[in-house]
Image (cartoon, rainbow, N blue to C red; front, side, top):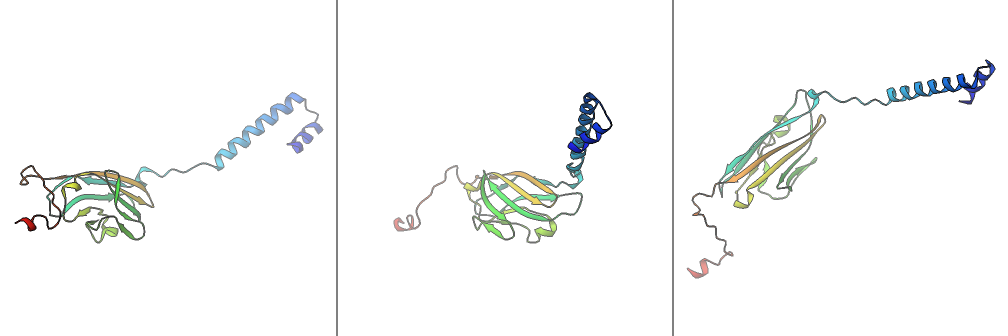
Length: 171
């Protein structure tokens, strides 16, 4: 700024003209800085989407919640999280971490098929609930929701739980 002021004073400009010149220069510098720090937002074609379907399971059998990741361009899956009613049931972050052995990805080739469907083995009534699949890719993050309902018909509407060996000791 001092260099600019010296140049302007040498040309014997009035203080008003100097102030106007400095305001114009500071505006130009501000515009230049904004131009330098612009952020490029990827087009919507770069983002990934997730399509999930709810399902009905049966106690004692395997149940599946279908979820498939889709994008317009190639992408790489970096992390996968499956949650039930907000609680983590399965996570992939370089290595698979399973909170409950009964929960796993249904497709063993999921990295190439982008099928992140959740397989619930030996389904229990307590598995009923709202599930979310969150996928982190190099193109963005996406979340899909699905509900697992449990068919309780045939259970007589009543569910009993006894400690192991309790019934056999009295029969």
